Image (tube, rainbow, N blue to C red; front, side):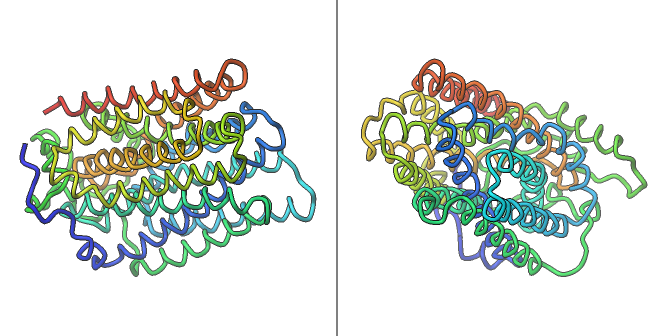
Length: 440
């Protein structure tokens, strides 16, 4: 398989793209705050209750709105200016988090307040995540998709997981209310970055389709995945602008996915990886507390390892695709996640656990960049919101099921069995990815 020219990813040209630096900064800052929040609340509940089941409930609550909100959010994303929508979501989430911080500090609120805050944040995040991916597709053309997805993954993982690591060190000094206060400010900074992304209103259905652009001459996902078929190209042709109802738009999005098994397989692969990341957070905290006896600082070190691996994986995407077929990189990464997570609880030393988590972060980064770039290459821009929202629902179901399962297994059976189940989830991602690779 041809892997493209020798120059690989051109980061300088990517960051000279109008608007992209602001989107990158917004994602990094926003997810930095989210990482602080998620790590802080996870450790708070585990320390207060000493229960992995009650700690896993955080993941359940943050993902629960993803069963209801995305179908409506997907249509909204494809109807309104995605920049304005992202800004509004940042303001709403800032208000929720700062209110939670105030209640914890001044009113002595407890776990119930934390659970409610997490639920409300989950509703906002279930729209925000799909919105930012659709917004990225607006800002970046096909030629820079791999580089853009690698950069955004660096922003997401580097922001969220470096913050998670920092939370492990800060928790003992500023406690949860201090962590939440920082989180609230990051959302406001993110909104300011998005405000400078561009000027004016841009309706998604008025945009030219990326599917109609010329084929790229440099290394992109199209060098690794098959180009669109004639049937897909027809689906990329936008309809004449008309007054369309919600259910018409929803049906159109579902019909597209039913007719695109390769896109669905890629989405399932990505959904498995998303579910695995959130589910593993509870397990890593339990590993630090019960196996390594390293406390919050050990949790911080392991989260630092993941963040470091994710950033390295994002930067190395171009190099890996230049030297190896992208399909092999994807499947090896998923296989490593499956086997490695099953063996994770047998890491009896903190340094080994940190190294393994760094490897997992790198593999997750490579897998995420390859799947998202391929999805963005194939899916027409006007359907991206609904497509990403459909995958968000799938990821939500998996996250909820995994959170209940691994939390209960860790508490009532053993941590080792819980990690085997987590490895099996990545095994499903491997199978789905292999199916997508085979659809050529």
